[in-house]
Image (cartoon, rainbow, N blue to C red; front, side, top):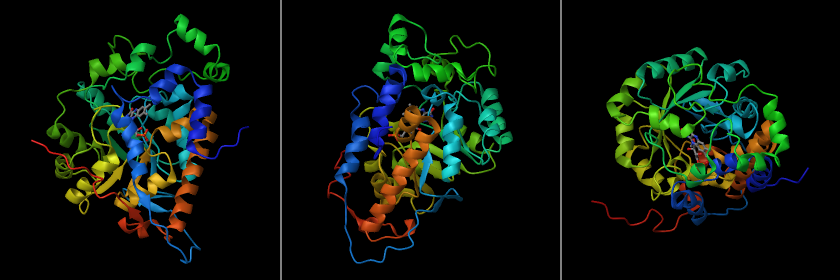
Length: 389
Ligand SMILES: Cc1cc2nc3c(=O)[nH]c(=O)nc-3n(C[C@H](O)[C@H](O)[C@H](O)COP(=O)(O)O)c2cc1C
């Protein structure tokens, strides 16, 4: 067993273990991948203020997100096809999250269904909804999430149409993988993954297959999104969906102060400042750069979370110190899952926790609530001087 000391170690193991098609699906951004890259490089521009001779005993990373207690300000973001990264992947990630004490969010485009994850976990998880043309199907999905006792509804707003990731097209991404000569060759080198996949019956989109008719290709994410996602989604429709859910509603994919204000108006409890991990609008700002202006616009009236680019506990610290109430991680836990299943997700969470805890201590802070912009050294022109209009 190799010694794992950081999230990138997990990524390397993951690359070795999982078929290329699914690794590429995770490790891609749209078009030129500029936003995907800047999500991480912009975090690197912010430095930390070292403080000394502060009593650092009795530290805690515990806090809350949408009123729920969390062991650290981190939620597992919704990730489609997680059950293709490791057999029963959503169940394994959800279990690791509940044991660690952080929320897990199940994607609409998951392999394990809502009911399946609920049956194999003890604590409520969050459900992420993609809005579709078939309103009746959306209503049924929401009802299924309610029946499964999901404790928050996450509505993703930045994927009415799918951003193009070149590799997915070239690889013919599908769940389960279609057996072409190229995939067979690659699968032959991934026997550990293959054996586990053979041992599970969960290999299709669990929230879709068996719940809707008339899909031209039930294995293709691209066919499903092109045919079913609702390009006419607007704030009025978001409000209607918001009103169907009694508990907390989180709007994910906000990158602009005007949209943050609109989210407030429709009655969201939280927003996630996110560019979908650089997978949608290439050329958009990184989330960490977009965060300050959004906080200025709505930060005192709504919980503001952030995702896209978090690969370390220091990134979490930077986002929280800037003003985010919580952060979400996508790839960081998928690397762990693909590398080592449930144990790998736990390992990813442990690594992030340790980095966050030690960095907090060396910045002279003992509690999440004590983190503020005072611990950060932010380049003067960090947000950029852009001209619009
Ligand atoms: C492979 C992959 C699949 C994703 N699928 C979904 C999804 O089904 N629903 C959703 O709202 N976001 C989805 N996202 C976006 C994540 O929820 C999150 O916004 C993003 O991963 C954050 O960036 P990070 O990976 O740099 O942490 C996906 C991201 C990845 C990497």
